Image (cartoon, rainbow, N blue to C red):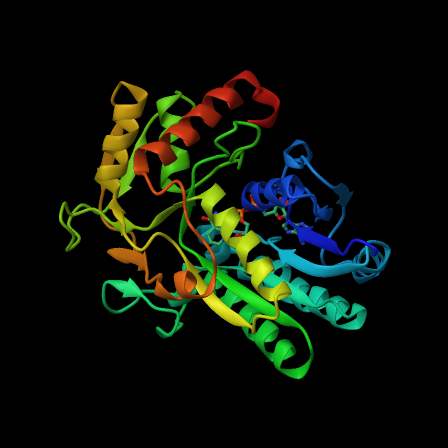
Length: 332
Ligand SMILES: NC(=O)c1ccc[n+]([C@@H]2O[C@H](COP(=O)([O-])OP(=O)(O)OC[C@H]3O[C@@H](n4cnc5c(N)ncnc54)[C@H](O)[C@@H]3O)[C@@H](O)[C@H]2O)c1
């Protein structure tokens, strides 16, 4: 039997490369499509790499046919929230319009399954302590809106065709491959653990903490940090679920509990063996005090058993990768 192909868009990026690694280790027939706008070719360890754009329908159509693609994992997107506020059309263009083109190619080629990288940003500022998959979706920035619109298109296409999908709404993804082969190389990163690790290796001068008077135990914001390799495994399980005939659904991806900014800083200082420089600033508009996933549904539906639910381990893998990047200034 001809092996069924898997297309990974954005597979040279942080999360896509970790998922492609796990798919490759399982012997999947992989093709990675990435325009390298924020990704790195050297992060693609398995499969065939095609440099190109998800909006290029001729190219995507050809890939789907040549590799007999049965399943698509769609990571390609722009991801910087403040940039989406200053340049919204860039985000609607790349994240929404190009997803629409990709979906059309999938429909024309008869792709069976699609797994979509969505985000907790679709919830905006959730009421209550946990965001449920059924909580209202009211994004507060164009990045979240661009992703929510993609979710809507995907649901509508599945309703109108044989395509089945899993939408995974990631919370705060952090850490790097425990084997040390790949990691988060993102330039000008804005996410807390990556930035803190850069301060620890003196790539940045200081860590800015925004808001110390939230109604949380220590006054700083609380987030649900999920290790990237556990998140990658959720994709493997979602693909297995769809291949077994599972129906389309949307799942939160987090551990279901959060850590404050101060707890993250304490973990970094402990693993680093020395304190990092921190400066405190007022709250930023639009930052919720707490954003933590309700995770009952993902555990009910997928055979997913996270292995790295440990803040110090997450921070350690992040710091180890940052040390590695110091030896490779070209990709840093
Ligand atoms: N990092 C997080 O904490 C987080 C949280 C929630 C959701 N997500 C989602 O996960 C996905 C991956 O994010 P990431 O953190 O790995 O970001 P990333 O920037 O490292 O990866 C995105 C990849 O997509 C590629 N790309 C972008 N537009 C493309 C296009 N039009 N055609 C082809 N390739 C294109 C980039 O070159 C890059 O390699 C995104 O869809 C993002 O919205 C990330």
